[in-house]
Image 1: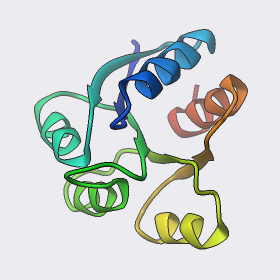
Image 2: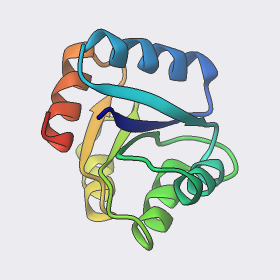
Image 3: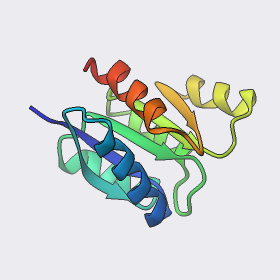
Length: 122
């Protein structure tokens, strides 16, 4: 049974790139939903089964950290932050808020595959 992934990023180009990278992993996963901000992502989490979230940090309406804090109130699924800001302060902030992982853009398909395998036990 395929695992379901939610991509949260305000850039549709980035969502397409992550989707392509996920497909290249060859893992039994499928991108089932995309959201352009944290608010849209919270609505999707409440409306369909999601096994893993990849979430950008900087977005309008509701940023990735706000999404992470709100998602943790109701959902225990793995959430990986994606960002261009790879400082240790930002990483620690995300991990303290409940992130299960962190990838700095640009990332490789291998890095993405490693996160998926680790968090979904594939």
